[in-house]
Length: 492
Image 1 (cartoon, helix red, strand yellow):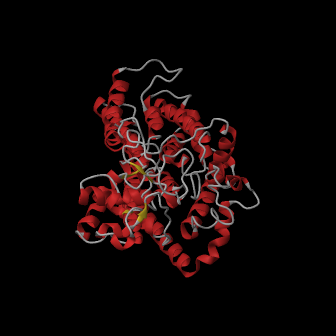
Image 2 (spheres, helix red, strand yellow; image 1 turned 90 degrees about the vertical axis):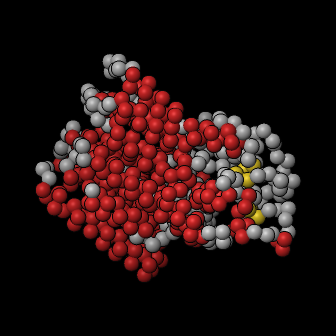
Image 3 (spheres, one colour; image 1 turned 30 degrees about the horizontal axis):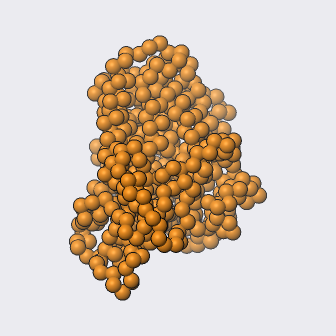
């Protein structure tokens, strides 16, 4: 147990070792949720906003000092479906296509994001709220870094669970390498562990469900618990429903019918686990089936553009940033030729991966905003790591050239994501000279890819980047040393 605690502490430290604040305004409502729930006993954000109908010299109350504009893109009117808002002021904050209108001067203000990640972060952020007492909110920097801590803790828990699952299929050395690939060679390094986005919560739900259900023999209790966990994952991020479907013990062709009781229990668990989201939507938006994002556009005609962008575009393509994913896809394909419950679930996850790719390829903002790497597809990163480990147990990388190709691609991802962890700035390449959110064609320019701009920016990191690199390397070395005796003592 002590070994696992020390592993977790090292992972949390590693999430901070880059000494570079990577965040976006998206994370502010998720962090403020703890303050509004604990201090106000509600889920609206009125106390944090800059009321347009109140002159600055008449604003009273310490919580209003944060002064977030009410028309900010991550706010909408509470219960807007029941009480349409008549916008009586000029909108100054750009809002994404298809999103809900901003709240009016007399509307209560709510977040557009589902509440799951904020709920998961409550145990970490509650001490900050209680320590601040009735006084003013901490500044934005402290808020962001408190959210960073919550994200790092959640992502580290997910990594530990993933590590345990990987050991079922791979020896200690290979499992450790895959853990480092997951944590340092994906968007975990630049997004999920860096600020309170939703991805850490999705990873935690998925890895816990894999830990419960990815066995050849699974009790009905584990099926129910796995369903509950994946259901709550939907509360974190609605697209987790696709992953939940993939993890179900379904009779995917050409497999013979399985016992119907297990899928039913799993489905019941998913339904119960998603109740918090339905309840939140009903309270906040007036309907359990309304959600904060509004009618986000899935235009269908952009399928090929989105597919190309998500797969091979120079500045978002997963095959560019994470070419080792080919081994994961090979492992998922291999599962279709193998018997057993584990192979059955991996087949389901392969279908989920295809559905996720198709869904986001049709999304108007398929690139995921100003981020480094393919963050949308990296929600499936834990499943991809497991697919590789299981594939290794089936001889996936038995030949020398396959091992060389896999580890060469892994090194490429390590270099890219760790360079970005040191110097990436969302207000840099993604914004200058053109903002990719408004000119996405820039994401397809091979002459000026995002990753090359990040590598070129390394010298500008100066002493801070050097210290961060040394600190990160020292933590990885300490983790390797901790595992050294275990690796040598473990059978190959």
